[in-house]
Length: 141
Image 1 (cartoon, rainbow, N blue to C red):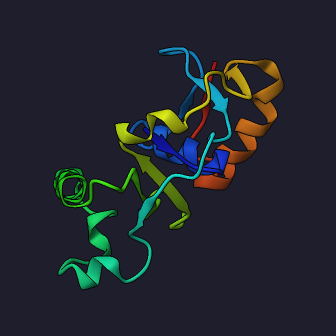
Image 2: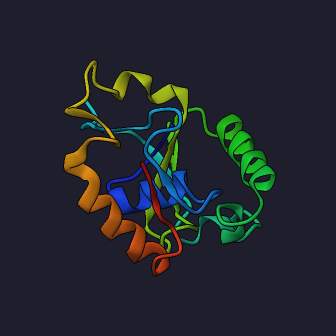
């Protein structure tokens, strides 16, 4: 599971491929929640990648490379429940990838769960789309 504490980061990560925020196809939802407990993460934002013989390209380069590193980290550190890394789609903002080991940290119910097509979110989504790409992403209704 990929999570971020910024809606802007979530939108940039999810809708990067088509360069538009599509609030209809696949009925995307915005869920917010608080973790039920602390989750041990491996910090890839700092010097760990360099010390491990890599670079920060392990979280900003091609996905197969990042996935291979995630598998190696998973196997090497059984106490780690996820990784903290930089979003390559939103100015290196913090993003978390949770392994299934963190399942017990997820709440039974989200704090909120709204369809992105909710008219109350429209102005916010438009503002974020403009901020991310200077109008090169548009909202699909």
